[in-house]
Amino acid sequence: MQMLSGTLTYQELNDYLRGTTSSLDLPRLISTLQRYQDRLEALTPIIESLNYEPPKRALRKPASWAVIPKKKRKTLALDELRRREGASYAAIAALHTLLSPIRRLPVELLTEIFLHCLPREKFILPSDAGSPLRLMQVCTQWWRVCITSPQLWTSIKIMLPETQDTPPQAELHEPSSIPAKTALLDMWVSRSGDLPFSLSIQNKLLSTQGIQHVFDICARRLQHIKVSVLDNERCILADYEYPQLKTLEIQSPGGLQHASVDNLSNVLTHTPTLQQFTWNSVISPVFRSPPIMLHWRTITHLTLDATITLKHCMHILSMAVNATTIEFRDVFGLPPVPHFPNINLPHLSRFFLSSRHDISRIFEVLTLPRLSHLSLVFFTWSHAAITGLLRRSRCPLQSLDLIYMPLQEGYLTECLEIVQSTLIQLTVQTFEWPAVTDALIDRLTPTPAGDVLCPRLRELSLYNCIACSPGRLAHMVRARLLHGTGRDEVAGGERDAPLLEGAPIPVDPLQMVELYSCDVELEPLTPLRSMGLKLVAYSITDLTVVDVDRIDVPASTP
Image (cartoon, rainbow, N blue to C red; front, side):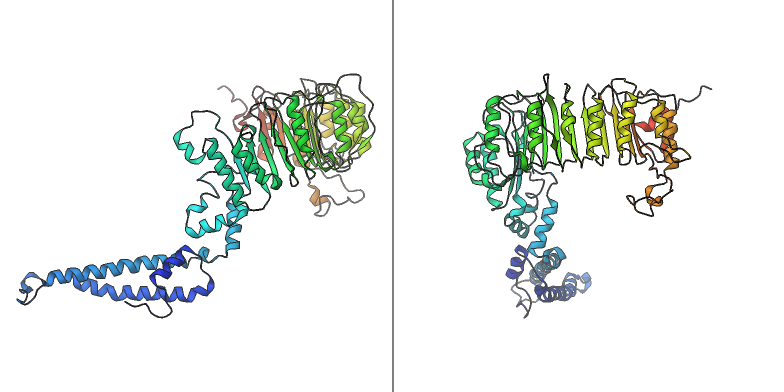
């Protein structure tokens, strides 16, 4: 049967299924669909009539001249009609597929949708159960869009299995052999075109010849790198130029040797655009001479979970003038403490500092006018240095964490008074040092006159530091929940708007309290959950979250 004008042939229909459609193709597709539907309507009564079997009494003997019995001719005709009917149904199903909205999407829009299907992690672990490999298995059109969209191939995570006993089914998703890893990385890099590339890899793989060859090709395009150091080899990264590198993360559970630090410092001298540098080390490496070197002035985010000397720490602070986040997890400093000039970091908003030694000299020379989050983990307390930093900086501090310090309540109260107008979150943890007693709790409790310490406080975490009367903490929390007018109401709908003269000080309701599950103050706080308080209790042994819904007042004995 010849195709009507303006409709698709079988071959054209198959070609459309492998390609894309547009709004210009709609008239022809609809015309073809109508034609196949009309064919079905015409075939249905014919097939039904041929399927009809008259009563046996009405049957007559076939004519003697018939070469092919009538019944056989009827069967052949019925088979041909059913074949046409099946082909029509298949064509209609294909046309409905072609008429679906997603088949008419432009390639650019389809690529954008595919980008949102990618995993949210910075580095994508290849898997045929996830994007982009899974998208390629849907249809020829999607396969073609995937391999021609370099944006889908700009990130990869290449890892060796942790054990040699890799189950066979896992090899389908994560090839374990080094040649397979090399081929996978080569494919990913080639499909990414000239776009900036993100790579997470183990340093053991970097030493293989195949990976080195791929690295030669993409080194200048690398934008984000994460290296997991499984064995303490000398070479962590190949000595290339990395003109586009913005993020570098080193994971070294076993620490790094001097030669590895030298290699890393040499590589970092070729990274003029590096903004974020992270070094996580479970076992503190020997971080002495020579210290790690890089372009500190370009750094905005810095995390060093490795032992560094106080002198090197101060050198970094003096050079990292554009940093917004700095974390020093282990600063080594013993007397005598060298003299340091004053340091002003105008952009620093987050500062984490941890040390087992007295390094209070840092606070005496620092000025941090934009500091909003301060976390200190110390076994000593230098009150004058810390309060001097807060007064000198006049910073809008919103979060304050004081961990393991031998705090006295008067010292803590003075710190809170300096930052009380902006403080939102407070964490205090000591070794059973009575830093929070009735006096501080009463200062935090709203009064009818509107006098209250830290009126914006919404989150309070107290661990091993409470020495107040039973129920005093719960009374303070309840009072803040009831007294919490909300700054929006007082300031006419704007939280940071200036208050009118004579207006009461707005008090934000305390939204979250965190304690150890063994703390006696936990029981009186539990009923306040009905008022909107989020109460979180941690186990003092393993720091896991305890289900506070089950912490109830013991039932009385009948």
